Image (cartoon, rainbow over all chains, first blue to last red; front, side, top):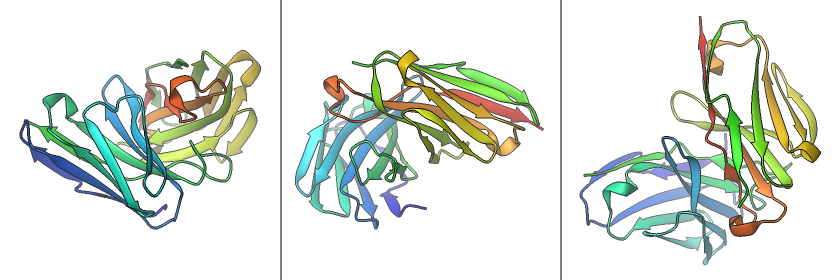
Length: 116
Length: 113
């Protein structure tokens, strides 16, 4: 199994509070991603990183920011959580953008976030 | 941007039956992957298959890139095959995805003993 650890695994927070989710990898892969999964929507990309301090937006980036100060860590921050951000968040890693033949996309086990 | 449609949305099988899951996409792709999400939420990469056919045990996948579809075959299904199967693609024309995978909404498979 790819070495990806997400923390926390579950979190309940109140509207308006800041929240940070952490993704840690031990594979030294260049690319890291944050996805959210919601019923009826599949997985949607929030942000991704292509190197230390190199990040870019995905299709649902509003209300989220990210940081990558080390190769192994990718943080997702909700500056002021809203109920619409209640979701399951997945981190993923790959050696090439989007994953490929020798570099499949590997996912962490997810963080279930509830905003009340 | 590229559209990815999976069918059927739900599928219920008896153990031992075979099944075919379909993924249609609206643009040319240079990357297509199939994933399985088990009932505990874990996402596992099954195949990288932008074209051609691959097999892994009871699972096989075929992508006909020129006709913009991919099929995932599950033979002699087992209860452990239950979960959601996702198709994900990267459009050759990138668009807003910037080379990242765009996921379909998945097919939920339930295999009954």
